[in-house]
Image (cartoon, rainbow, N blue to C red; front, side, top):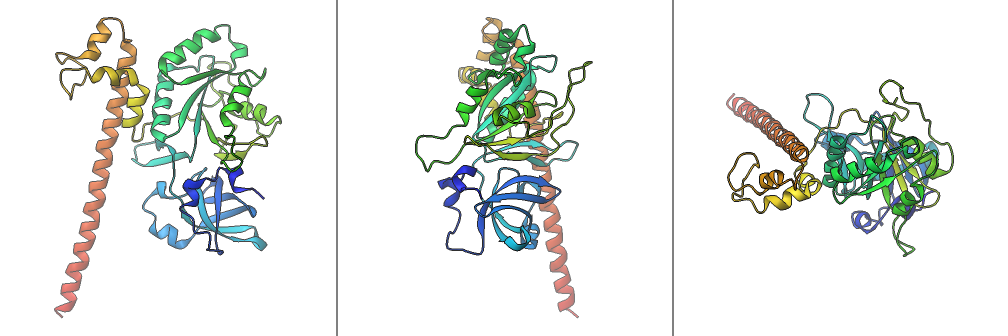
Amino acid sequence: MYPLQTLGWSGFFSSQYAENDSAVVPARVAEENREMYRLLCVEGEFMAEVSGKFRHESLGRADFPAVGDWVVAGIRKNESRGTIHRVLERKSKFSRKIAGKKTEEQIVAANVDVVFLVSSLNSEFNPRRIERYVTLAWESGATPVIVLNKCDLSENAMEFRERAEAAAIGVRVILASAFRGDGIEEIGELMQRGSEENEAAKTAALLGSSGVGKSSLINRILGAEKLDIGAVREGDDKGRHTTTTRQLIVLPGGGVLIDTPGMRELQLWEGAEGLAQAFGEIDELAAKCKFRDCKHESEPGCAVRAAVEAGKLDTVRLESFHKLAREEKHLAAKLDDAVRAEQTKDLKKLMKNVNKFYRERGR
């Protein structure tokens, strides 16, 4: 049995749930595998699938439950099974574009308060990737925190930290070691709930590439070897996928962690607001540009370019901003095309039915 507050239940979700409906209960999605879901609730743990009505009314992949979602489900105790009827509105979601050419949203984790963006202090460390992760984290509605793992193996840990801070201005950076225990207490403090007894437990997601040590960090936080871990390849410091599915873990000391598989590809999804926060110094300078629609390239009176020329803004930082902004704009255009195509398809279907109606009426 899992008390709802232990799972992260709060007033935001209770306001969407009718407590007088005894046929269903609120439950949290702990794992998803091929549209089968492991749910945690006050009744215990159950495997579930969505109802036929839910499937019929869903418009796309993002409508289906994701790990971290709160759902309304009917539970069959004697079978240890359940049926999901509804997904409650999400207060946050970390999304990316699915891999490949198809323009579709993939929700990596839902209803997250803190996103721990994990990088290791070896050749895997990449400030540009950190900027991308931070952009998506701010866009999700959660608070990003950079975790630089394996600091026990680096002689230049402080230098790495400074580079991370430059790539994620204003974001907290933690030096950690799953082996030695560095940073574990600091991570735990960010997971703690407030002083009120009825305040919900916080939810955090660990995101990063394969081999950065996410599973090792979780084992250290749990104080037990609950998750499998694997070694990185010596040639390129790239890791193997020891975590194959996203899963929600309830911490014995309070809080909820979502472990995710390593991501080799991380494309933006709706990154406009996240970009403004991730590149806050550029956004601030842009307000002083002569033209409101300044692209910060060759326009006269550009405060951003002036800052670069004065050595107050790193050129690489601006180039990264431009790259992500172009990607976000390209994705927005593709989404518009996809919406228009779907609307055209629906209109053709409607007109076909109208024409059929008049043909049959004229017989």
